[in-house]
Length: 491
Ligand SMILES: Cc1cc2nc3c(=O)[nH]c(=O)nc-3n(C[C@H](O)[C@H](O)[C@H](O)COP(=O)(O)OP(=O)(O)OC[C@H]3O[C@@H](n4cnc5c(N)ncnc54)[C@H](O)[C@@H]3O)c2cc1C
Image (cartoon, rainbow, N blue to C red; front, top):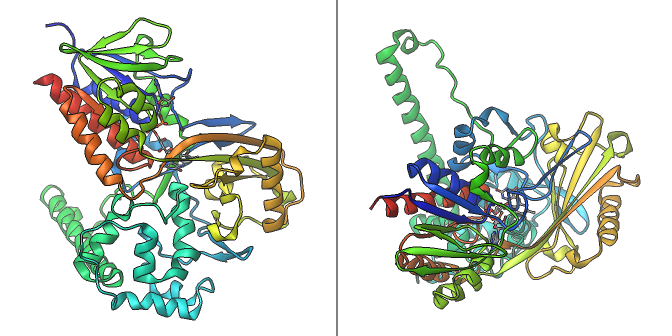
């Protein structure tokens, strides 16, 4: 039997992770990664300019989902990761043009600390009382999905949703909470309601469970060490395990991960600047038609393009799958980063940035004070500020010309931060149809897509359109696709 042949279509992080893992899992595999662009990385795009590190797309990833850190460790770049600035913390939320401190403890979107919520000026006394009603609102047990907005309004009230949860959530999905499915975006919140009757009760139960788990883990670690090293059991400090901050990123940008992955492939395995047009099943083979070249034949196939790019690829063989893929909506967004001299700023950027609720009616969605959040991103004495423009249902902002967008962002920075200086440089990145929206009905679409995919031998899907849009989710989806392909080939 000859070597197994695998084609991966799409060279974003999901496709790269899939291709990397296929090489590890399928001995002697003949791999081809097909990518439309002449570069790898997809939405990961780092511009290193004059000592600044400007991220066009993602700029960090969460450490608690282990696929991100795990891949960096395997690639030998874990020690390149930096956490967010420990000296300065926090961020702001805009209300009526003014910045309010974001109350601490908003892990998992829902307030988890009583003190900061009780004292914040962002929520009125009546709004705070309404939040307390969470303890008495009966759980919804009809098994129907609802939108994120419906859920938060029902449990905690409209004020909390509009002033805090909506802008936080749109910072993640560039999405509209009135459309996003609770079950597909924050299933743990529904779970908490069902298990504990209220979010507040769920929060206390989780805290207790976490404390108990931490105590047990510490005891287990101590016992394990006692068996090999009695000195440690006698009270000497245990060697510290690496504790990652919640958000991490490589020193010179996320492109470091793409570069490290790229090094693991041979030149002949990468077909860059090549668009896949359609896929077909002929006998026991997959045939991938590509633009301007001879079709590729393979035993297994990973589609790691955005879902709106996968739909036309499979339409000829499976219209039900293509329809479900095409039905996942996507929002367009853009990022605009500007650099200033620190001395040009009327006041220091003493937080990670701010988010802007939809009802403020601004085209900018959120602004990150990048060089405060990650000080290594700008040379000493300079600052980097990055604004997000465009959200689901409103992409008017990103239709503007470069000059108009820059003018808009400068006006925003003059109004909010009092900056009147001209930026030393600016970098604009437009991302059309980049952010998949897990709207109500997503889980149904997903079950059609996954059901259809598994009916095709040796076919797997990966990418941000399905079960998580963050980088660790995309890496995990690529690795999952590789495992499914490897197990198909092994049998
Ligand atoms: C502005 C922005 C900020 C973000 N910030 C963060 C963040 O801070 N942290 C975080 O975790 N996530 C963030 N995200 C989300 C995250 O970046 C994406 O979800 C993730 O990078 C998507 O990876 P992917 O491989 O699924 O898709 P993509 O990166 O879109 O890769 C798909 C690839 O497929 C290629 N392709 C498409 N069609 C074809 C075809 N027919 N033939 C060949 N190739 C094809 C495309 O050219 C592309 O390279 C952000 C996203 C954006 C847009």
